Image 1 (cartoon, rainbow, N blue to C red):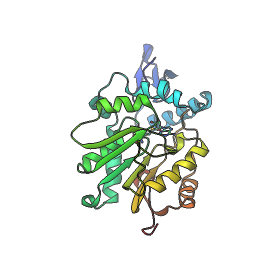
Image 2 (image 1 turned 90 degrees about the vertical axis):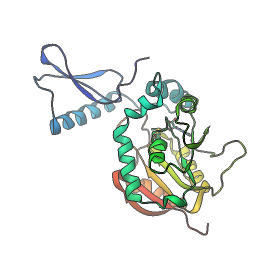
Image 3 (image 1 turned 135 degrees about the vertical axis):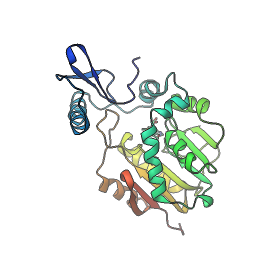
Length: 263
Ligand SMILES: C[S@@+](CC[C@H](N)C(=O)[O-])C[C@H]1O[C@@H](n2cnc3c(N)ncnc32)[C@H](O)[C@@H]1O
């Protein structure tokens, strides 16, 4: 299987032809005639146009665990160790840290943190850089992701990892009712079909401690696996409709919610 490029890139080919390789496309997708590599605004404008074109020619996926196990995750993590993987996400890790700084949690009071649909653990890792004492709980429904993470996630932190579905957040006999001080659900909801999304909101509400907080962010780029992008208003409304109290919006479209202390 071809390896997914880790970022969008502009390169020069024969005769000074500039080629653009899209981040999520598996192949070179466009050729642009030009003598110099585009910079700054021109670069961003070209990226926007071609990303949009790719969406038009690449249909959305039919959601399935098999697709995540056999296509999505192998393209991301095959052949890399954690250190190499997280290096390709440096900018992302920096953004999560900005969100945490803006959030300014009382770190010493936080014990149990749940990272929903943890993928290869980059968000969990970013959080542990700032709050190394917390116990990080993480799950994903993909065996490929979880097997890789179990072998590769740094062992100098406290963490519990399991393969599980957002529709039923439990690890064997542990059902985690009202257990987590903080939950992160980042770049997840846009991957879920409507019913699973709604069930997932209910489950996150169940496992959040009263007075705890949920940090939510949806990815909104045009990609085949983003089958359920909502407006930010709809997203917030759906969570409020299922019991969460909205507190505020943090940097980079991250939304902060809580659960009433008496629930
Ligand atoms: C973009 S990734 C999440 C990124 C991750 N939260 C992070 O911040 O690094 C989306 C993940 O959702 C997982 N997923 C999709 N459907 C799921 C479900 N029903 N239950 C649990 N995980 C699911 C996929 O396997 C994939 O790892």
